[in-house]
Image (cartoon, rainbow, N blue to C red; front, top):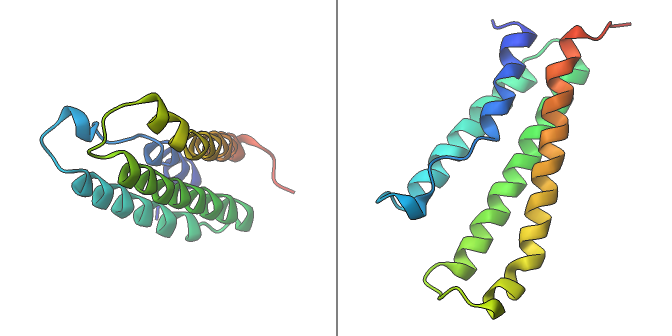
Length: 122
């Protein structure tokens, strides 16, 4: 079993996006499946932590990432195949802003997880 430092250092990996599907020949669905597999692996490791606080923060992180993936998929459904117009940007901008807020929250959770092993436990 990995220690908390090793497990939650991996938390940063779930925030790393795969190579842009626009810049490659791979279909977006391939990247989506890879991200979901990575998310499932992270969530399993998070909930195996003995410290209930770390397990819950890891679980919340995984949940937020899952919602971010879902929202990103919804954005792709709207924009894929459409010409890049100002109207399209205005249409998806609220979803993009929500996606950014989700990613910022994930970043905060990951920062907490990375600091947690050094914090004294009481």
